[in-house]
Image 1 (cartoon, rainbow over the protein chains, first blue to last red):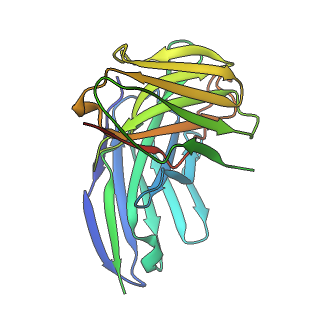
Image 2 (tube, helix red, strand yellow; image 1 turned 180 degrees about the horizontal axis):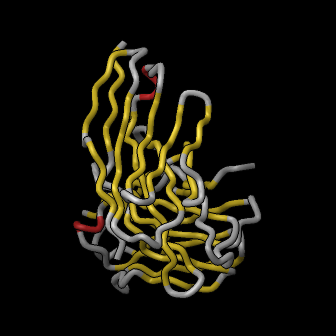
Length: 115
Length: 117
């Protein structure tokens, strides 16, 4: 099955700095790569996603890059703010059991933005 | 409305109790999911319903019994749970999972924090 590795497990930055989280996946058939942000006491919320036919996608301060050849994708947050502090999960989606799709999550990165 | 609503938010139950978790969405999504999340771990898939039919069961013990009464509702019935089943149970939905070659955006609820004593 698919295996997603995520690094680092914790990341501490100063407000205004950039943060980068990296993930690798194992199955070349994976074709959809979302990133989720989970704040304390809440469920994961989709913040950005990228499909395998695209190399980069940006949404304001957040960007994701995908390198299919190397099977890795990264989340970039610029001008970090204290409210960006949360656990971030990367995931890869692969077809499972016919027309079903299964998300495999990385282990998560605890991002702390210090004021 | 882009919300997935889960009730209750917290639940404490004994090992002999029977309880149910409820999930509701009004986004017209036809796929609904149950995930289990232990502290400081990623969500783990338990069940997937597609068009109100169970399509994926990730070898979950029978003490967890899912039910999808209609396209907007998803229940998880709990019976004879063990303390190690204590976790955050997350419901999620997605629009359509029968488009081959297309991964799905999942929308998660806030979860039910379950404690089994």
